[in-house]
Image (cartoon, rainbow over all chains, first blue to last red; front, side, top):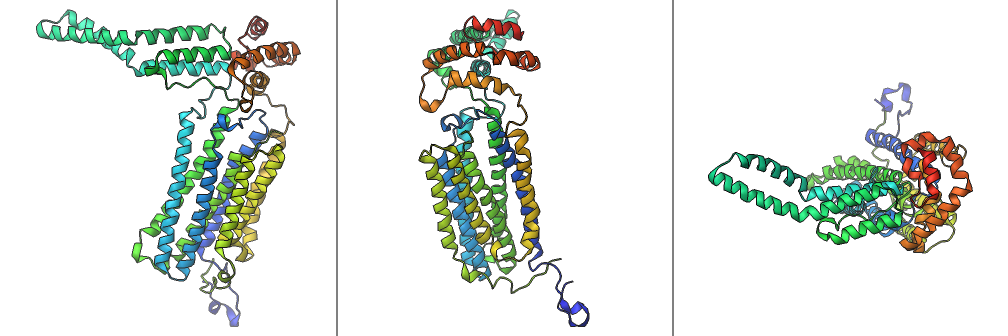
Length: 317
Length: 182
């Protein structure tokens, strides 16, 4: 469509851009991705600047700058490997290209591994959008919910229901069936009695909270006492903590890093398609490698901005 | 629209050592991490350092790894609209949300002073017992300051949403606040 031979009288006009269609397509896509990420990063910046009291203490946010720094380093090395791989493809050194693409993919997986470790830390500390207490009353509500769940987890209410239905049944039973039911009833009563003190103390705690005569220190003390009295059932429960703007912090954090992680996975799939070729890799894949490289560099670029914005900067003066 | 020119990649690769760019990127990363670990007292300075490092790293990746330095003029046509939208839109939003041009009326704003008084700054290592006392004193000062009561009158609709958030549960001074809340 574009060769000069189709133009009149020896003109040397060439149409279009001097790059393959796929490369142009990838660049246009990256342009839209820039806008995509700018939307989230921009709203994070704007919201954070407007929120006096946004959590910035790493002990509260559980944001580890060393983990972030290592992730940045990992992505930079992987970008370098992609560039070397593409260079090798151009020079038709397909084995070298394959080797460097394997290293790139491995580094991408390492990035996801460190990210999962960071996410696990967040989940473990209850940092999830919509789950964080932003004032004392919400902290008390969280504590009540946690204790209720701890009681549920022991099977307390299930056992009580079973006991009730067995007691109804046993009245009409006879012989060996009746004996086995009575044995079961005795067992259930024993198990329920074992959990009764915990369940009753949780009820007392809830009454204490609802009377609203406590302050934060008092609430923390009550929770600690309850946890210490029942280490088996309650030791995993979080101490009450209040994070102002914690929920929007968690929202923006997971949105940005989550979308970035999805993009990393897509990049790994792109490389996977090349790696599948193995020894059959040939020059028809050069464009694919170049474009996947462009995509991967973009992912690195986004992380280069996410890292300082999430892990380092503080907008308070 | 675009065609494949088989000679197009000869003109560039000889001049750039990717390894040099890689080391530059590593050094820049190290600078950012150090800027955080070493406590720089002025947050604005830290932000400027760290964001300039980010821009420098982005430039290295964009120009050399992504090869933009050696591409034709189409790069301007492609990147101009995206850059304008990417930078222009947040700047357009900043006056509304990031600065205090409009009064932000969120529950956290009312909680902020009480929260800072009773929960304080963790990095200063306040104990929980101290928090309770500080909160108590701040609660007194806060109620009598008058600002809190001023807002209460105007924003009863917020009070319904989370009536408990304003009532500090410490002693009789808050009873007056509670009764006007409910």
